[in-house]
Length: 283
Image 1: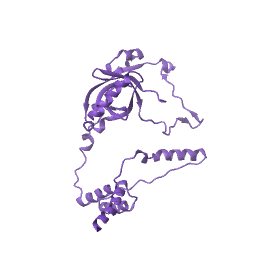
Image 2: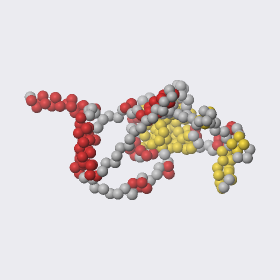
Image 3: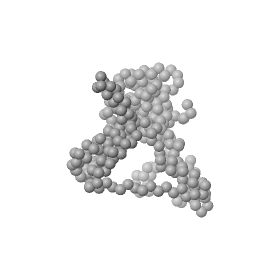
């Protein structure tokens, strides 16, 4: 396996344990990345750690500090962090099982592939995995990851498991702080019906390959243009807000436009069934 594990330790269910490794399930290696450049010299700017009194310092010589009062810090080095040992530092202990629907989507965070290490623990991993699959539940556990203990939700995927870090309650803002001030509006029933029909016409299956980062593509095109000496300007006008007076007309035009556009998978299935229905009616 080419990627390096993000974490290595054990997966534990009651008295059954097995060695596992976590691998980051997503990647950002294809993103367009920029560096800070001095336009007068075309030199890349280097971020040098600097002490306001002593000047530049080596990053390897630095320690971390927690500010307890103004300009007063409690210092921590790597050895101090190693002394904070919880079971979740080296072990994912499964505490309970829940239905996936019980976990609000706001709490789901980063996904990791959970892979068994080679050796005697492979059978124990298979037992835990297959038991989870049989029960159809999501497992909850904890793990110290990147300097913080996170709750994990683990689910079966193929021959392995996927662990999602879950945000803590104090990390999720209350929706009421944002939604409570939205003024109550009674939407026109006819307009809602037309909008619902538009939604029905655009129904389809989720395919992640359908999404293309057009902003990223535009940046790459601009990079090519600038490399050749051009400006590569991209100018896209913002849409106008739909006025209440024009809302019904906009909905009706959208409904006609959706009907004349390429059919979605759901529409294609419905169209495929129509000839058979006509034959049956003729018979």
